[in-house]
Length: 170
Image (cartoon, rainbow, N blue to C red; front, side):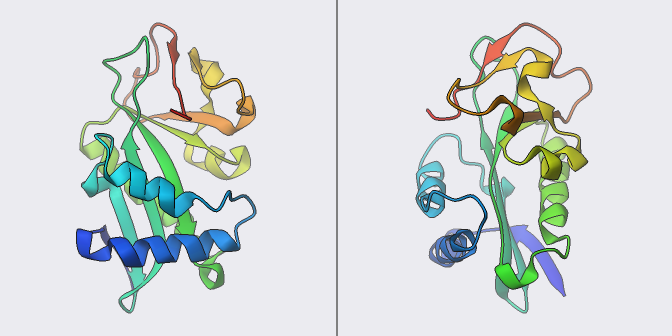
């Protein structure tokens, strides 16, 4: 039976090992995903309630993290970054990543967050309703492919308004 719960400080080392292992077999990886998570945990962007661990028999099979993401020009927009999303190799293709993503998005909306950004495959994230960032008047780093910088409104009308800039790399 699968269980999704917020990770705790007691899980950190195990989660980082899991993330490193999961991304070792990912289509796209820079090998720094566990370090990215470690840096986020020590920043003001970290949200413990939105760093979720999926377990089966007490062992991690998936992890997702949503963290605060400032938007220059839209400082009042409660935006999150979805990164990373990891599923153990032998569990891929079973819908676990989608289950984790839907649960994280549900929890984020319940906590009052208005939108979520992701850098990822449009075919994968499009099924959740993500659309190109530039389609809603937001801009990201020019060095990132526009098709892969995507956003999802969690609250109706959240993405209407003035232009804004998201520094994914900062």
